[in-house]
Image 1 (cartoon, rainbow, N blue to C red):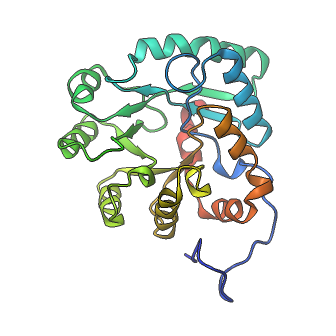
Image 2 (spheres, rainbow, N blue to C red):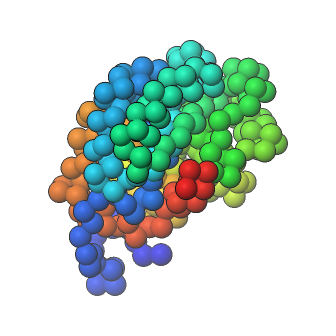
Length: 256
């Protein structure tokens, strides 16, 4: 694999075409588009507007993933599906070309282990689930929780590992991946939206080939503006991402 984000050298492949949209992603598998349920979209109108814009830029398949986080968002499967249904119905009636299903971004803590996991998770594709951990540090029960997820038959995908700045050793993520934990990069991370250190981590993980999937993690208009402006402002980055080989398409079997 050639170097992704180092200065150009004579042996580094240069862009040979313009990337005008996000069709290379094969769909979005991390977003907060269920209206009025977490810190993402707050209305059906906003959800539809966000989706229409991404659709116009080459994304026609969505797995939207509202937070299930016991301390911050009082969500469960029933509530998520209830809030999702109006969005699903609207898209089916007005933009049937768009395929969408709902899952969740599960926060791994004791509440998840004791109260959420035993009731079953909303999986997608081949029994995949998106999980996240604290931005402050690894949960002391992390290994136990992750093992429980896998023992229950789920394939965990760790959301935006580049954002966990307390973990500076890329080998830790490499070891997790070797244990069957897939990795998902936020599209905004590589732009520097969340800060220089997170951008650097994303570059390292791309360089090591540790990512499996890419997602927008779209919450609001500011996210949307930065993402949709990428073809105009970050063409080289977008080209390199299109060459990476994200495996998002493998996740959409259930909605193909």
